[in-house]
Length: 464
Image (cartoon, helix red, strand yellow):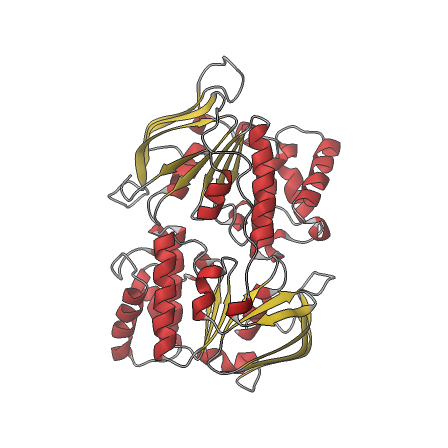
């Protein structure tokens, strides 16, 4: 299916500024186009519109946007969309049922569905049987399952929003190989949003650069080169400070599972050090981050604060701390940023933690203003956090963790949705905090970010 936009624009509900305006773009049937641009440039909004999912009753548009010569909603049956947040795309309790859901909505003959489900799960190397619970999947496994559900539809238009953002390097390479094979077998049009550009260049025909004012660049992949993340600020392995937090044989098992999601694990988080936790999808990285942050109690073992409260202070079990103490001393960034938003505006979100930690309203407001500037969110101060782009949500979630000035920061996939400029700014911000004596612990698949920031790396494996 082909795509044609003529002077198209969209303004989302509750926003004064247009998310995208003056878009002129033509994509021929069978073309493979990579959309790039700064976070907030309107890339995800455009994919949502192409899928026919914009609410015409509450969303203002201008110009025209056509898919297959008609309105996007008229072509929805032949369109497959992989959302930026895979969890929001999973609707069934079992993996196989989730892949079958879209096929059933297309009224595919019942006898054909099991084979299509099995084919799609095998194509993405899904590591579990069809009856596996969708609630027991890691973020990367959710992303792989959501992709299987999209590919099972065999769409004429394939819309992918950061399809490898939550995957380990091996898994990301497998997804690119799957798409190369699938697109080679079917004449599908591909529109892809990715910030990690270089690995995708062999697969695509054009790179289109977006801003909120429309297309500012359109070139073949051979002429496109993304920005590189700057070199590390200092050599990893430099001397570090005192231990802030210590996990001793910490393990956790989710209800209904017969296996530990993580553990037993021993790890020490220190001041003036950035620790990267890496490993394949499903190895327990996000669960370990929740344990270290005091947000879930380990099934066995313990996590204790040593020098986090005060030098020479007595050791305390972190899982026993009240929320107010956690907010003051440990800042956590969840893998899904929406899970930690609680207020109606970006400014209020940045003030909430400090206020709960006992900070005065005036000081909390000053801190929020500084973070808005530093995180390039000032123009969104009054916006509802749930209406931000994926990259903006991630920067806000980092800001909420920083707002109460905790001595220890634990971040899960902090560079998700960020372009190279956003990665560099985040690296500079975290490195400055580390060099001021804060402890930094981050979970990531972003190898470049590890090289740019980490002083020490801990690798988890399945069953670790």
